[in-house]
Length: 443
Image (cartoon, rainbow, N blue to C red; front, side, top):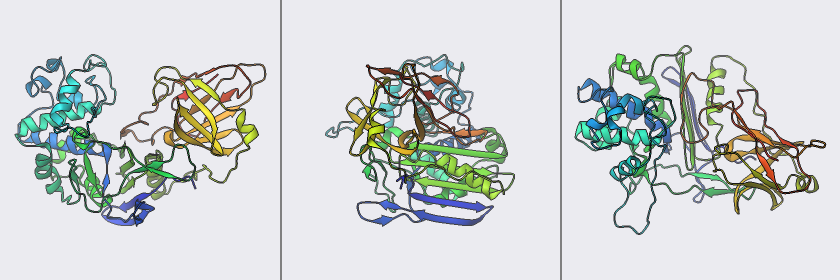
């Protein structure tokens, strides 16, 4: 098996749920299986909830989206030039920051306030309004603004003004000491051993407030999708302002241990929610989009990734080597990466740390599960070894809000540089019949 999917899937036509099923384990250690009522961290699916809270404050005339940030966060650098609308639409230039160093022995844990102070020390990535770049830090600032404008903690205002009016009883802001009944625990594939899972890294939830701090169920997220463009927590006109009407709306998120998606096809009145407690399941957006397509009668390509292909150790040895990506080409950083034979398979390494087992797909192709990418090695006679790999784009939805990498598709191709002498693969290439996202090559 590829060891990728464990979670819950919900598919509905209108209000009628036609499929609601759990897969795999909510807690591997205790042998507790996922059920439709399992509670998941929903990562960046939290952001539309924050947007609805902002819309409610606009209706209450406690703020306006054209307000400058400085009105609520005095002394914030260039706060007079940053509007709340820029923060909401990722056009403020705020650093994509939603964590700060954590001292497990500290008597004073990190808070939203400490995160805002940390963000204020970061330089802007670009002039406010000049371009769009995904920013978790911008949504932390919006959560802080909600607290200042409402006079209440973010979680209290969200509960009173959004969650309760929508009837979302299993959705809440997760505070760090909170006991979450029915919780699905986060895992990821072992980066060095095929067929094994490991516990996802710890994350402090206080610093995810606004952009990634909520937990929820598939049924609650279905209710949220059904609420869009109705008169409920906010008026229908406010929904349309926040989420301009389109035939399909999709939201995607990712945080350590979790990949999540929810989407609504307004034309065919179909809703899909996919919640996965495996960090390597970067394909949940593709799965959700395929479910929407199937529900409206369209044909979709079956998954082509394989788990049954064996690798020849002698041939694999030729692919081993060290590769240096250009700046920004990989989410791992800009240092060299290497491919090594380890425990009976090829493993991608960052310095001395394993990043992922490469799953053979036949010929010279390998699946990189942690990036949901395909890497392909190919020989080139007389040419210095080079390499490429690319990942599929997010679902073909006009409006999609993604969480951590992978996010928006980038059609650029990044040449990798293979370091050191010796023979080896001439090219690494990836393919899928969708838009190509970043290509990385190596020599």
